[in-house]
Image (cartoon, rainbow, N blue to C red; front, top):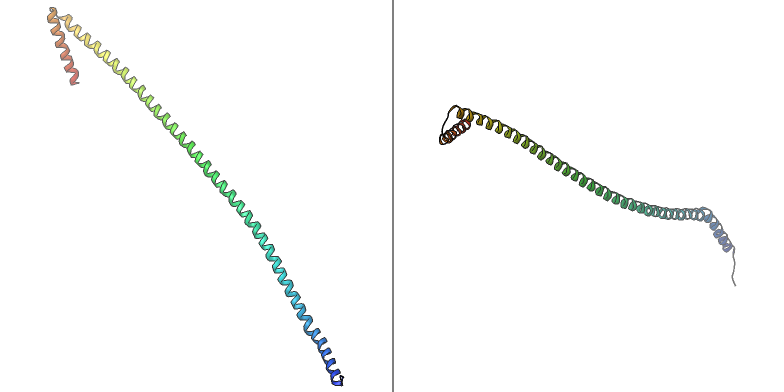
Length: 164
């Protein structure tokens, strides 16, 4: 059978003491270190999940903002284009009105000058008639002579007017 000697019992006691000493000095700190390490890893994983969720939330928010900004920019451009078109129409209308006013003023000026020229013509014609009448009344000629004299006077007056 088995022979248990004192050395065997001492070896068993030594192993038991070594076990308890190693357990106290090595296993507890290593177990504690491993538990802390596992907790840090789990915390890092949890933090990474939170960060990923936050990043996804921020990405969605930024995409929404970007879409809103694009829509707003499009609306601003549209409004600016409409305002520019309206402004162009106003400028064109003002230009047409000014052009029409200028034409109307020119037509009025032409009419005034025409009336003035007609009045001068009437005065000159009256003066011419009076001059011719005065010269004809001073001489008594036959009707042929009168016609020749009137023609001569008209030519003379026309020549005088041409020199002036």
